Image: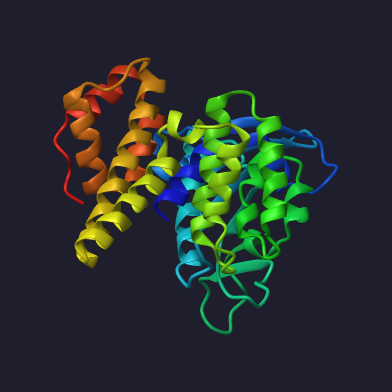
Length: 325
């Protein structure tokens, strides 16, 4: 999912309780224990999509998969992931029961007709009793703005541009809610960025991205430009690409401009994650390695490494030769 996946995973990591509370049956006492951190992480970095919980005093694990659409390969991916996750949980606590696991696919776009509330991946022979896995489907793009607001968290407000009834007036209220709820300018910028990334998906054809940008600038002038994280960089890159295309009359030039801008945006976000982990900006060699690894391995895997590896281990990883995919 590219930009959307990076943005949502980053926000989810910062607000795990908000993520979990909306996906756990209402009224159940819940305690967030943290993300699954296992020896299997170096094999399957996506394990940071699994959250350890205690519900009614009992251990549980919540696995959340952000999906651009409920494509045919989603059940396969979830089943494969659960194998890694189950192995990781067994390895972490040998001899102890593996906590019950719930998987949820949060779907951002797709058909207009209602999606099912559950999905499954069957592995049994035809005609035999079911074996495999079931998972919940949370089609956020088929919800209303009011339903998303009722979840009580700015984390879920960022999905508002996907809502089937999203309007300029409704999003103005959402922007105001985020402005009031965020603790810092940086947090507001990250949430605004997520709003813009969701607006680019635009499953209902609302076409509200430009209006959103104006709302944000009106609410706090210059915030996006003062905080050059991924959403603002992508928007500026697209604008530059469009201008080049108009000036040169070359569609290829426009596409190259947009792609270059997106690469700059990814590099900027990953550089900021590096700075948070090590307390300093990457030097020229480290920045070059981040960019090259994002191109070769994908920005998601580089983001995982920046989040998973500590201090010198991260520096050593950036200095190693890039493994072939």
